Image (cartoon, rainbow, N blue to C red; front, top):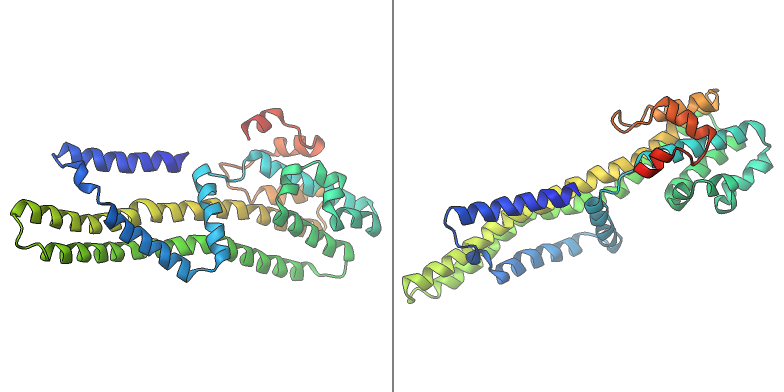
Length: 293
């Protein structure tokens, strides 16, 4: 929502201010200039990135527009499922726990938290490290190093779209100059025309420079930053899992281990201790939070 509001403000102020100073908005409508700029930027985007990143870009753009960041319900579900698994790890045998981590889709624990189960990457992350805890031979510092490496890998993969769009944003002013130069070349071929015609052609050429800078700093740059912000918040769920399981491996009780995970959530989004306690005692509860999510 904030992305849409921001775009309305940007283009509303830009066009409104231009019209208020006496400018003719119709002059800004130069479709072929836009085709040159946007078409060239899209082409270079395809050249520079593998198809997987191209496909992920469309998904990331929708996430940014919808601001699909983890909500209170997501944090509570993640902490609750970890609490339930840790309690089982303390009470059940290796074979009994294996049914949960080897086939989470059939696990009663995971089925109680459908939003976590729907996040396949996060589910696999949880199951992989619970499996290592069940085996019991790995040292805590080794698991921590492995978790850090995997989270870094996930971060790099998730932020490839951000880097790709940032590169496009940085290239757009130059592509705008290219479009403007082509417009000037066209204008030079019409030097025998009346000043009104020549002025219109030069004005159309300058729209290329204007559009390149506007698309760079007014659209693609902010969009890339929004994608980065959304995806970094999604990755925060992995950090919660990491800190919780490490605390448990170091001997903390499940309720204390969950607190380690809760503390990694940003202060303005972090559920209170009372909310977490109520949720872990009553998985999937918390009516007000469920409505807010």
